[in-house]
Image (cartoon, rainbow, N blue to C red; front, side):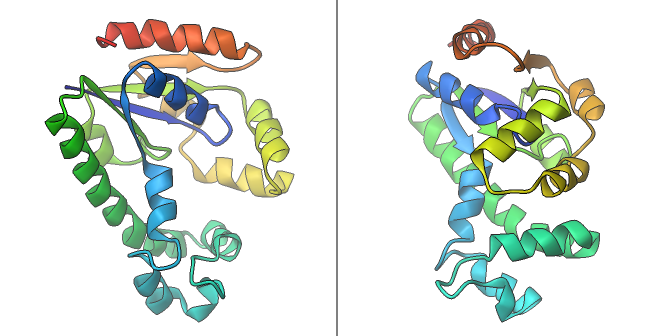
Length: 199
């Protein structure tokens, strides 16, 4: 079973690329989706987050207050590290469970969709190849503003908190440049990449 690590900055189109891999038969394990699951009401991360950051970090519905914690974590690197120390092991644990399930089911390829793959030595060691979805920062900002209520400055802070674009590109075995091309062209490029890995 081939293990591919898929990463890219916010707004790069990584989710779209992951979707095309799924259509081609890969099992996609989405770290962001798992993170949302463990920080939803009743999720495994809620009690330790409340203990570490206080009741204000949790919404009235019992989920992580994402807007509040985004502000806290981007203004305080230590707070961000504390939050990641709670969430990341839970994401890794569930990812490992899903990987084992895929292998038992005879999957030929697993794609780990991980925004912070390059930043994390643990993730890099778990995959055979790294695929980076790339586009200029201006494209990232335009896409995120179009799909969310985040302000321009907040998006810039998120980009600044992630590994620099050049560093991510240097870590890539394969780059899918996703700017000013159609969805059909993205799908064609993903198909070509997937074919190299037996899909």
